[in-house]
Image 1 (cartoon, protein in one colour):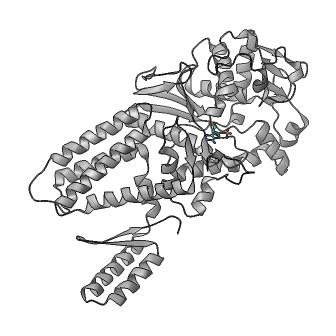
Image 2: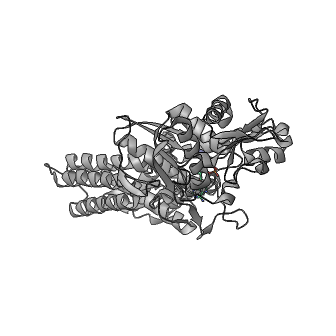
Length: 478
Ligand code: AMP
Ligand code: ZN
């Protein structure tokens, strides 16, 4: 497997530091509001990497934190007149619900920054002892950027003082160097108001955002992690500062591979509330979109390429997912051809291998999807030419290849799940489909059409084929 490491600006072979176990840290959501589909583009890539590593036989320790104390969460809690935890917990749960709706494998841990304050305090103490941090007059503690010679290696920015301030805020006048950033922030009245204050050797305060990730990654995964992930906006200053903190504290490489996900655009523009193109996963689900289609729309582009989210794209994704479901049903239900045939079985195994190689190539999803569609086309063509039949061995191999690919993509089972209804309901549909077939056999087309309309109103789509009537449950926008 190869991954693109942004730090060294190269795509190179990936092997975990400790054989058999891969450690991954992905910067998680800041829980002051619902995560939007842009955030979820990044998180879907986390899930893809997680699935692919597991598929390749690795055990994976995958940590995705909740940023539940920072300027935004404190401001959000204050504006809502709530305590910090009262404000953030519902959004943390909403993230887990949305991740579940999009079929994510459970990550290993979702540490909340507020549950790891002692580790953060110890981290700062360590940095102070080593001369990488100093206390300002108000009780805030700053990281001394000039004390870390490698600063700027990730982003290529060594002198950009202004950008370094963007998410650190108050107390800047205490800094010895404009690039220095807060590790610990002395308590402000608004922090007291929402209960975001902890004791420390430097007085009451709260951790800086960058410190949170360094401390949680170290506590849960060790000094050196294999892969660190985040959206491209986190490259600077957040990830640059994480490296400075962690490597100064431990003297070791912090992350061996740095992956950054390109930002999602909506209708070719930056997503923002004021442009009205700001969507959350739950809004799209409420509109009736299939979760598997949302997932498909977010993963179909390569993670380092631009991805533009549009309704038309979501409709295409809905059609792609439906096509895959129909394909799987056709293969599952096709009658066995007499004798044995191995052609499609061999082909399916080759396609599965090609799919795996594409994913091994820095998660090249577009190439992997092209392989998937080739398999679909080949099998459909073979079925068309053989009266819809296939040898049993071939059918097993095709289904196995499809299941293998879906183990990484996570869409087909998810789509089937979202269409699943109680068995009794399915039985009623089967009865109606049979009644319609009887009506057609009796040339009572009015009755047949009535039944079709009744089924359509219930979200059931019929397809009359030479092998009989197939039905599918259609979810999605009307
Ligand atoms: P935040 O909740 O702002 O801390 O962001 C959570 C994750 O979503 C981070 O990894 C961000 O880099 C990522 N992210 C934010 N906006 C977008 C976007 N428009 N497209 C893709 N990822 C994003
Ligand atoms: Zn982070």
